[in-house]
Image 1: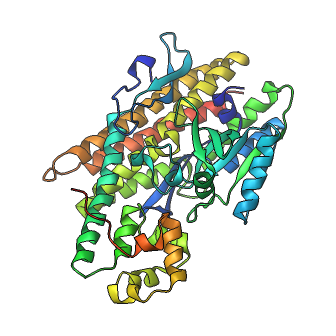
Image 2 (image 1 turned 180 degrees about the vertical axis):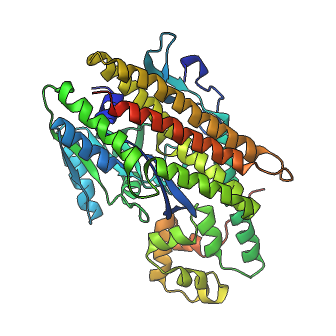
Image 3 (image 1 turned 90 degrees about the horizontal axis):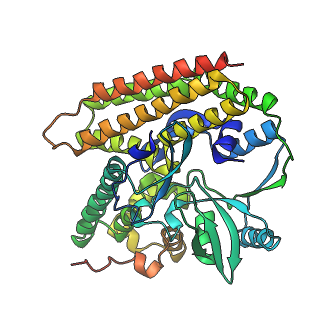
Length: 303
Length: 135
């Protein structure tokens, strides 16, 4: 199964602005569901069975991972970016939600496939343990996961509509004001309020939005492209014209997210004396929410 | 995004590595394209790194001047802040703030120092002093 297919069938596309969850003093902005929810989504929609294990004891966590690798399994793991030795220094912040695949161990070195890199990487026992058991917000607690049952065939006719409707409804109708499209509008409001805030803080906040979008979690706008790819794949499988049209629109939304990031990058690059046009940035975000709303409404009529 | 529009800005953050990006071919078919980075992303990351450097430099000077304990410097240099250090160590923020005072810090038990050192990945010996300035 392709990566976009897994992403789409688990209804992973999302948006959430969580001002009360702080990362380095800045709010968490998520462009997809948390990995645990993605795994649950896959189980529900596909009949795939995954086992997630967390540990209170580090040694047990390591022994269990080693035993699973010994069995020849590929194991997913939640880690902190800060402790992964193979990541460039600039990327190493205290972000505990980084997921990767461990596919082997040689002597005391783990063989890892990290979504950040094209090629495989390595981390030694001690380093990897530290990354798996980092403390703080979203502490991974050594979380590892692996499939215990993989279905032979997928009934796309049944599963695809369900998975797509879940996303569309969530984005359009989530009652809390910080999730879905309402979350985007809430973030836009916050951006407008930056006008009256300390200038340094305002610029850092804007930069943080871009980092959450483009870097942490391998790209927020990127998830729109992955979803567009999913819509294209399923549109072809089910010969559904609406999905194919929605795919093109979703690609455009991804482009808009990138324009949004570019707009911010320009404003934080600008000289200290220049004023930042917060209203223009907020408006761009609101227009993205409008754009996305059209797609989700369209998707609800696709089946 | 079209495949030929995938940014190839040779981001310094990537260190010559490449990252997978989904983009469309000429006929609109989706596929994976390797990107060498994007200026907008690099900008935002450098900004965050610079801010932490600024804070740790300030803390370094404050410590040299005897106004702060080395703890504050190590906190920022390990990319932590009061909140995240508090969450990682399980110590209240007001307690950590007290430990920024040189006199209070000097009297800390090895157990508390160990807790700080552990989440920072350094020895308690290193925690108690400032590293030599890189020239």
